[in-house]
Image (cartoon, rainbow, N blue to C red):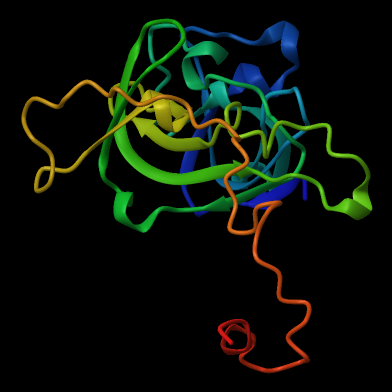
Length: 220
């Protein structure tokens, strides 16, 4: 599904981003339009597009780019670029929204592609899903684990910008569990390596004669 509903958050949208790309102001915008997050849509190879209910106009604007969305009524003085608010375009047009209960409202931080540091509290996650077999050949990277990326969302404490990052760029900070000086991750990217509960040279159970407890049959 290319569209998913989002949790309820009051937001403000830069007015210039509601007037066509030629009018976008990446820096200070003179006017911010209040609204409520409604949902988000994904197209493979492109950035996410958000739907926002602009209640003062009784209107729903369904193609708001992420860099236009803030949780503060005043536009920041500095530029907020697409490379600030997210690392990657969509891997697939099929998406799902969920939140990770352990991290709910936990402090997070992330360095963007621009080198800018953003900090806030975790809100929700968008993940990419491979198409079903009935939808044709899978040409996405949604299940190619070395390339798979989530989008973990938070609002930046300083600017109010809606930021997202993949797990390997996020830092989750819990005062009870984390140490003051964290260790530097040594982790390598997970590669699809043929690991399986049913390897090609596995144990076979086709001659179990229909026994309910086929493992018991195997042990004879």
